[in-house]
Figure 1 (cartoon, rainbow, N blue to C red):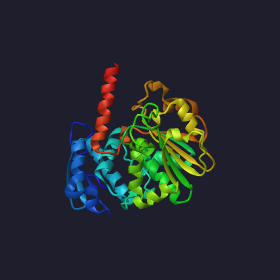
Figure 2 (figure 1 turned 45 degrees about the vertical axis):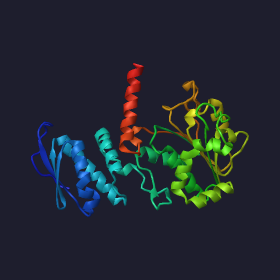
Figure 3 (figure 1 turned 180 degrees about the horizontal axis):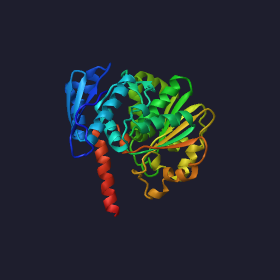
Figure 4 (figure 1 turned 120 degrees about the vertical axis):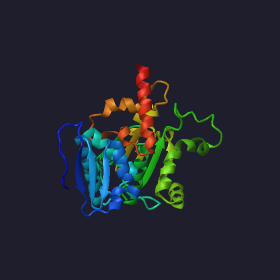
Length: 332
């Protein structure tokens, strides 16, 4: 990388610098029809012109510095063997603006699992990398964060990965069957028909990772179990990867009941979003109370994801921020 142009210290003045590409496929760095460069331009209020292996960057010193940091981060990510996506670039832009550095060196490139569509499943944000690391190092991990941060999806991926590598002998997925106390009686149909709609997100993730016939066989023989939380009472779950999803809708008693089901050679992941509690008294959420009780217990880890870790459609992050702003205004 080399620097050229008029270097001034006043942020109202414009400077020009040249970023030199070395040993990188330009299409991977620029995107189709230079899409990535256009996104960076718009987000940093700079002007970017690509000429062969040179990228000319013009703007205020701060804007140009941010562009250089972004381009450097993207080069690092490509050299790590990963592809740049719009999603990754949007995240990197936010990180550079907030912290002054990109996320490439802080996100694991190790694939957790190859999906049924032959796609590598791996962490996509720094928060998700911390999540995966916490699960690997601890027997019980709590992951708390807003919608779209991959809490459930990564939990399912890690569970399947543990099963495939014989680290556990079975997987148990559970969640509160209905939002305010698992009152299933009023729903039509047998027990499967009653609870399946509430467990659908887990099935959706499973079908992303395993072939349908494989899932059916594993469900039939009990190697994979998907059940409402009420069905966990009185059991001991040995040699299992256990996931409690939507934990914000458990009561304190339900949370204690679940945690005391964990047996030998087992690992548990508890996920939830404390901004979407459906209990009548939100203060009685087991996920809120458990943070005060178990925060300092060795072998238990709490990981907190934020809107920066949202990996769904780019508008999801904006929606979350808008709702948070609305709630803050209403509370004031």
